[in-house]
Image 1 (cartoon, rainbow, N blue to C red):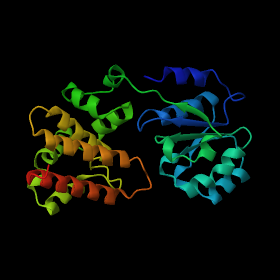
Image 2: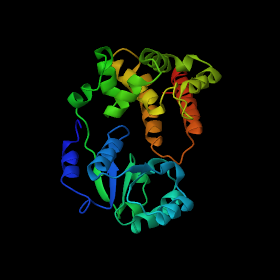
Image 3: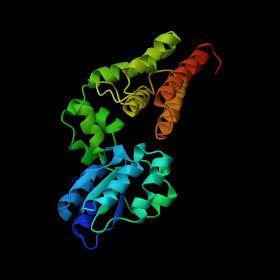
Length: 271
């Protein structure tokens, strides 16, 4: 596995008798957390079951009543505090000969009571050279290496139904012309974004990172204040996307409104 050789070596150095009962992989989206989980499953010769979409007391009780040795995978990213508390007993009292693997891209959203009971492994950042090995078309190399930081992000973007040229074109219009549109037209941009897991639309983080990329590409060509405002507001909302408690529709609506309003102020000489 490219880029995570130390973790792969750690996996092969353990067996069913000395592997941690509860392992947590921490890493950015697309960094390989699920692939490493599958590798553990293959190495220990145990089936792996993802129960992330069905976290409730009934699921946990059913597992306890049928204690066949398995690996249970739980993605913490979409679990609220109540659901995290539901799996706390499961983590405190793991089933004999079974293991639990937790994966998360946001350590700040994990309950301390869960984090303290895990053997934590943080995936390392990927170098540009490592990421380059996943790029299919060098035409997009610079673009992909500037907006993606994991192999999974590159693969997902290349394999999606969203044309990269169209993505760039849309974001370029935002950077250059959003303040020239009416607010209602500016808000229509949201129709192109993947807010409810419609996979032929643009991922929110990818959309915002593309805007930041275009800003940096035009740093010597466009009005500096325009670029400064656009980048700062985009970065602010990009960071907020990491909080899975927020409503993404409202978040993106507020982003477009704030960006449009601040750019309007700039046009009126408010800065």
